[in-house]
Length: 161
Image (cartoon, rainbow, N blue to C red; front, side, top):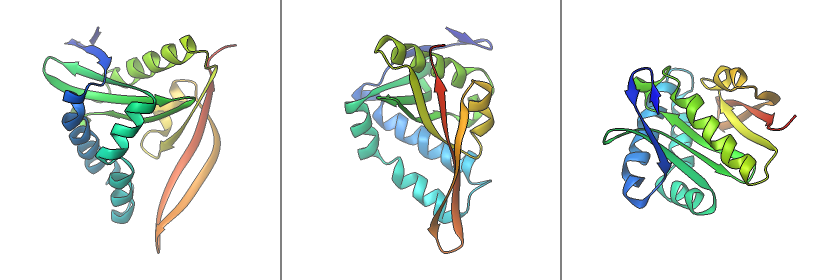
């Protein structure tokens, strides 16, 4: 597969990918989220996506990684009807990689009999998911610390019909 000139491969997460996935997630949170969320919310995201959680989610769901050569550039997970941890390395964003991953996760979900996917979208990701046909189910506001709020959107998409 290619995305704007880069040769890419998509595969299921393997144990050898774990360190790079955790680094990718951490780097993306620090770069993409820090401009819209306060420090305690950034800490919350880091805890929510820590190594043990990545491992547990991969064991109970379907986690994919995207590579350009030896470099891991993106990851995404589906557990049942829920999509989570969709991250594209900041310097690789806006090349169609996120859309390619979501297409793969949706296809695997359909093949497993899942007809509707849901997800929680951060402020920076909301428009991306809207472009892919996801609809806002609710707007959420979670106070992580006094005066520091995690604002996000619960979203869903019907895969059939």
